[in-house]
Image 1: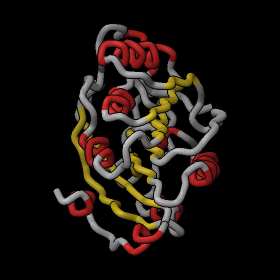
Image 2 (image 1 turned 120 degrees about the vertical axis):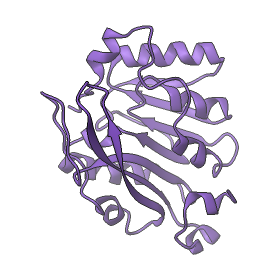
Image 3 (image 1 turned 90 degrees about the horizontal axis):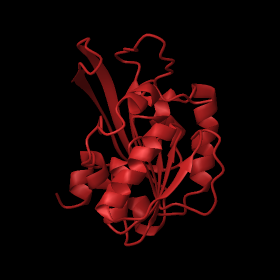
Image 4 (image 1 turned 180 degrees about the vertical axis):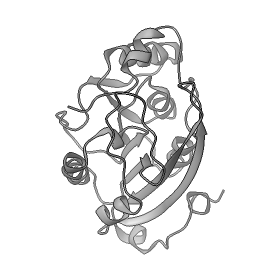
Length: 217
């Protein structure tokens, strides 16, 4: 089972949004690429900030989260913003999913799925994505590893996602080191932002460029 390292924090802070209520910058960049009303799957949606953002932008959103306390916060945020999201309580690695998704998205969660399991997960998610659809992930890599006490991690190796998506068009794969002191111990994480599209027509002819160039930003 994929465990959320933030489950206890979600329980401890029922009225506080640890990550805030505004979307990640990456979610905003990807949203600009999607056609209206596109089905979006947010895996490990946590407190719901990106799921709610996608829903407010007019997309049909399904958010999956293993933490009940996290989902309660997400549901409350959706109600406050007046949007509808299909929330699913479950393990992202094994949850039953139906239909197809023009975007499969995950920010800071898939690296908690063990490597041998997540390769099967990515293969399944590919099958749920039609030609022209996107997969966008923010993951921790093992270039700089930090784990809290008791935290089980199997971070991505640099280039692991690119290899897994060798049959897709990779639009973005960039690594960065970020400073963090959330647990009281200053440290760094190595983060990879990854975006790929399943080839279709002109999409398959896109050259490998940053998201900003693809959106005219």
